[in-house]
Image (cartoon, rainbow, N blue to C red; front, side):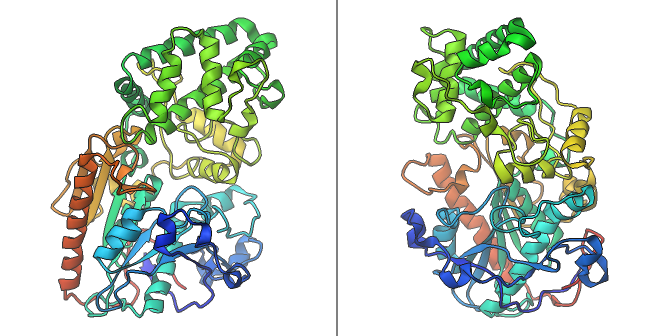
Length: 540
């Protein structure tokens, strides 16, 4: 793309975080009253619109500018001559003030080591960062144009330029007042981190991408690999568990089908589901069964992601103990599992407790099975992630007969039907990788200085970059790790495995070496517009 750096903008909304308060889970991370009342708009609704961003030509309400929430931690910043800027990518969820900056490893350890200013912007359309000010896009054109990774990255680019200006950091890499920019992210934000370095290499110097689902988004991962791997890890967590899960789910499925369309509500009641919470579209035994099994599948997926450090303290292991209980019948096991998910103790009586609609995302024609079969989430975040996985971030995830879940093939036809009903859009699974060439980061994208980390117990590891692609695109595979265990909300802690503890040191060393390379470079980097990869002209 042709990029022109953003001019100084003094109306950016930000929440200042003290790293000590973050460590103590203190809620003093909230925005000041002044910032809460600052309604000045700064971000561009559509970075890719022609004609100098005349958003009115696309009929967007509250046109031209919107306010993006972001958090900062300046405690360790060393100034323009000695400092760096770490940017933690916002992803598919709101960034609440009670959470603040996500990763202590970045905000405390890496920031202290590299004299860094830490910036964490919220992804557009999540939380309070609403380009249309709470108005939901009303057309397929708006969904496709506005709610996507490319627009989010351009938000981040513009914010980075503003922060560089605010800190007095030059944008000229040959200047001794240049502050190297390092992006960081885990999961989808890990993908964003890698793409920031790949697509916006004139802005970003280094990328740290944990559990980044690269092979999902270049469409080369096997459709059944995700849940097959989760089944294998579940088995390793508690030997015999996967077979007991498979047997239980098969028995429950038979009971639902035996009850039929007129009687499946009795099975729902027996497993603790309140019948008045069964979604109205789930009006047949087949649909109800599919949605129930989807809840089980993505709940195990969530437990798998959090199963670090491995051991009996994990939710994955505790779920296995329910299914492996020889004293319980299959329906009772399912009831106990739903009670665990619900955080309820009501599975010991006949009262219903599980609200099935609690599993729905917001929006029209919402279904529990969404575009992301690992779980789209609920509420507004679930709605937005559903549309993202219905457009450019397509994830082919199905349930095979080899997995511990009932066989349910994922098909592109199913996704097309779902996305048309939900948003009036047609998925474009090949759009990003064909333009950005992250299917071949070395020869296609000419990328460099990216470190990929993968927790090998994580279902998403099947779609990760798991080997070094060059001397500057590196992979670090962590056998004891789960979903971005190196970028947790807690670590580093004494509970980390020795492998993860060593990984912290290795990651720090690699990033340090690359920062030195950037600072030692004397190439002439101009601030004039430069040709990028997307083929769009972007102006401020």
